[in-house]
Image 1 (cartoon, rainbow, N blue to C red):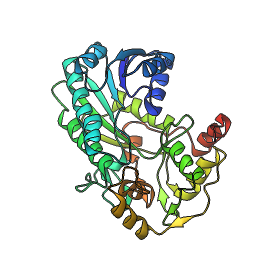
Image 2: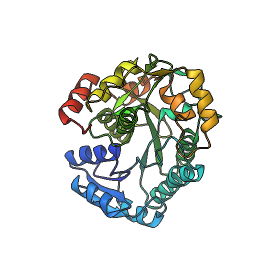
Image 3: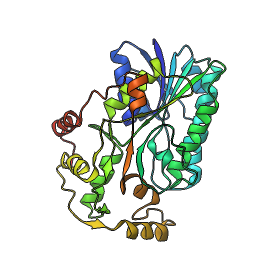
Amino acid sequence: MKRAFVTGGSGFVGGRVIRELRSRGVEVAALARSAASAAQVEALGATAVRGDLDDVAAMQAGMAGADVVIHAAAHVAEHGPIAEFMRGTVAGTEHVLAAARAAAVPRLIHVSTEAVLADGAPIVQADETRPRASAPAGPYPLSKGLAEERVLAANGDGLATIIVRPRFIWGAGDTNLIPKIVELVKRGKFAWIGGGRHLSSSCHVDNVVEGILLAAERGAPGEIYFLTDGPPVEFRGFLTELIATYGVDAGSRSVPRWLARIVAALTGWMKTPPVTRTAIALVGQEVTVVDAKARRELGYTSHVSRAQGLAEMRQAKPAA
């Protein structure tokens, strides 16, 4: 691999991808929709390509000569107008695919999520043969599933498309998931759903990057690969450790799962409901997936252990 194009390069995963690619001597161009995003990707050593996911021409130009496109951008939120998810995630993916084909890029890696399986029921030791949810638990699972459909449909005729699905991405520098939970804890708005003692898979951000780059090198066209840290852990214990790296105590307050579901149903019309169907589906019950296929076919190792990742977070000392 000599040249790569990255979307979402100013984000948590995309930024780590750029950093690792540059450490390997790979030339990187990254989509940047603002001056701040451009500065971020350039600080990582990438060439900023100004534009957004609606700008097929800008992406096509930025992809010229690329060996691979790594599509890590999406509309990431629990809740909100479906139109925002459809534009940012589904149409955005369609535009990336169109640009990649027009630029004659041979491979595209799409960063997806286990959320495409979320229909409200627990996800227990799921592998890549489990169908996507037919009735997704919210706009985020819906839009990510539709994006996956587009990616798989585009495979062939000179473009190999591969999907990776990391579960519960975490690590130092997270700007999305854990900081939001920490803020809820600080505001007294956090409670464990159903006690939080269920099992969960997880994937440290550097393990996500490992899987993405292995998929870029060795992934079979049209295939999907789950990525995790290895065996699942108790969600409550693990999240408590994560939050503690911010100097915050998660506490012991809990709400029954049945009550959380009722609240989600009754407040789903609100701009910021206290709990959502998506949150219940993804963090309020067991979500465990199996990454044996990535280990077997890609040589994936999940080289960063949870202990190592937590130690890195403690050393980074995020602002509480």
